[in-house]
Image (cartoon, rainbow, N blue to C red):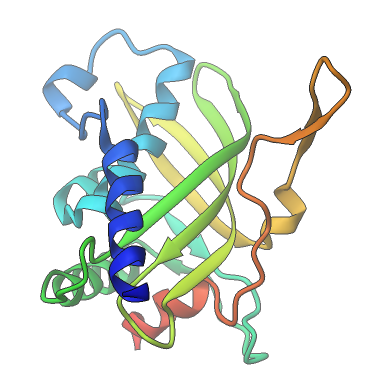
Amino acid sequence: MKCLLRLLASSAVLSSLLAGCNLFNPEEYAEDLNPVDSMAVFRNLVDAHNTLDYEAFLLCLDPATFRFVPKDTTQGTYYKPWGYADEDTLTSTMFKEFKTERQIPPLLLQVDTTYFSATDTLAYLCANYLLITPLKEYDTLGGGLELEILKRGNYWYISTWKDVAGETLFVEHETEEGETTIDTIPPKITEHDWSDLKVYFRM
């Protein structure tokens, strides 16, 4: 019963996350971009994970400059940054495996942006994430991410993706009534992080 409730809750969250979100469409995306449109790449990144859309995911990354910067893991092993080819391979493997799982949804990524700034050609975005997967060892992953998003030609791409500790991005805000409210995902201490999951599929 507990598992069923968890699946139903996950499905409800996924439905709310995907409502009103459009996946990357190059034809609609190429012309008359302004700085805030770099945020669309981030939304597409989240959508691609929640729908296991491998092609949409790759369209978010800059093949020429992309690198993923993992954090030191709970196992005490340092993982060096890797590039587009490694990210391509591991994500393809991960999405294919998750598509065979019976858990619904097979992957749930929930994010809250904590910082965003943009110029005409470059943007920086920080967010907390909560990632739920069907893998027993990596079923719940919490932390933060920092993205560098650049404009090349008429397109925006993720150039650098850093996996960081979520608590460094946690923000509290006070309401007008003086009560404190939280507008980001609270830092969640989990046994593993997104770096661990990516390395699992990279090996």
